[in-house]
Image (cartoon, rainbow, N blue to C red):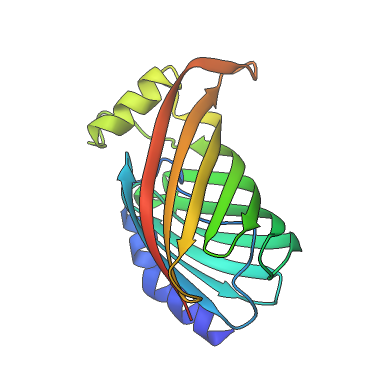
Amino acid sequence: MPFLLKVFVILSPIFILTSCLSSLTLNETGRTVGKGNHEISIAAGVPYAYAIKWNYGLTENFDFGLKLESLTQSFRLKYALIQGSSVDSGALAIAGGAGIGDGGKSKHYYGDIIASALGSSWEPYAALRLGYVDAKTDIKSDNYPSFIISLTENLAAGRTTYAYGQTFLGTRYWFSKSTFLSLEGAYLFVFDEKGNIEPSGAATGGIALGFRF
């Protein structure tokens, strides 16, 4: 797959030089993009500011992707367990990703389960994400954005190594077979050292414009 390798080589300096908390966006349904197809989406939202994602269909049910957010950069794999292409059909997929940042001092891993339903134009989806962050860095002294400091202090009690979860609820609106708009909201929560959910959480959300070709 020389094309995939070229894309990864081009983006790898960005992966290494930017800081990382973890991926905060989804903007994705339970359907894959289809063998040989590409999908590119550009998103804006809170608190991640921006996100750019590219997916490629390795097979009809299996995608490879790269994601660049203002906070995190990662590669991603997605497999559709169930998917229909007709109107009023449903889809269910599992996905996972891993990324690095801040010169390799921060790492994150996550897994998703995504369910969606396809209408004539609307495609609502819901998802659960579970992940792990290992920053190994002093967030305050390394001049991370203020909202990252706030997230780690308020959600993770100052820890930079922790497990977290995120629930998503959103929808795509398809203008055509190749162009869509995605709207989503999410709730981010963190597990304490005993595996219990911390009482504080954070809402995230955004909008994305996407193209499939």
